[in-house]
Length: 512
Image 1 (tube, rainbow, N blue to C red):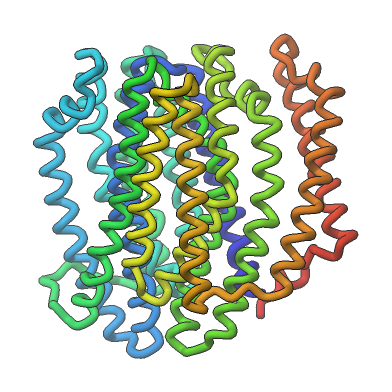
Image 2: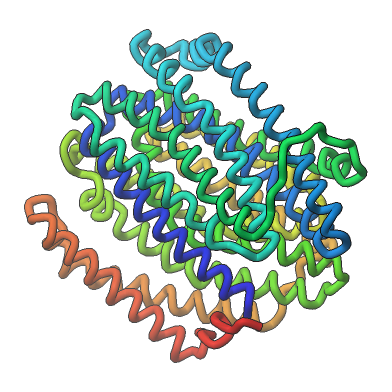
């Protein structure tokens, strides 16, 4: 079907984005490792990223796309005026936010990081002041990406991060090898990458004759509606980001390098989330918005079921692969230069903790899209708030009553994600807004059986291959060993799905 076909296209560009992101992270691991500079840089990256997920990704998309998609169906002129008003309001507010944070950054971070060394606090403040304008640039990128997605033009938005990553890689390769100077250059490159990504999506908008301009905005009914949706959605996204800030804060209370461990683990376990969850969320939200607007509820239910099928098809084997191969993947990708074997083991255990929640992270994106498409942003807020409270409680319990440390943070995130995902699903079912059809249930059984076969295949093969991926072997032998494990296990998984008639290649690539 067209939705899956579009999602596969977005997923392919996401793979390129993640590949360039891994090259960037490999360079950072090699030159900076898990040092105090890396810890400071991680926080400097996360501060604007938290706000990005509030203003740009979560709240904005869930509020803007359903309204804009609806206006495109009803009145294109109103849609263009709405876009110009949103652009003007968003630009003004974000400039104000950037200026305020640039002023209060020293006091804000000094308070958050008060239990850390003065050197670390100073580094973090300096890096954060450089990276914070990124929020303005990437939020405007999200606006133009949302516009392109509403027109079902997914290529530019899906590939924009590739351009940003390539820019950062170029700056790192041209930078001085000194650790501190490289950290400063990376901070500058992050902000520069925001400008590159913005230009990447603005140019296609102009090619497609989408040319909004800054103006004095009007408080039209659509803008008021957008505001009413945006405020609760921003609060919900804010709750989620506060949840992540709590993780960062707790990590600062643990030994040096903890934030770096979480960062590198996040990069690996987020790969399947980006490929599947982001792709489905990108394609599903504008599609569901139009279907519900046109009262095509049966077709919307069908799309939701097929989205879950496709997501589980990718997610379950990915979870098994990360569980088994986490240490070997980290060793091959990051264990170079200043990234040692101790860091490899710490990051690997963290990935295992995160991977247990992988299906929940991706299913939550689909369930949230179902709420957002109906312009219901309040319910996800309440669920996110409950998830945040649970995550904080679990973090405290794991920190004070176990010796799990950074792994405890990962497990807390996974457990709270499962609880919130199940809550979203039960609420949708209770309102008859998510009806699982028989095809989905049969398909899930096929995926589960195929995943079990893949699990045992990996389990037995690993005893024969593990010597090839050990520390002492050259890099090309380790890579070959991992490739054999991955390829054989995937062949077994795909073969089982084929035997069970669970693969739907024609449906996935169909344009209808």
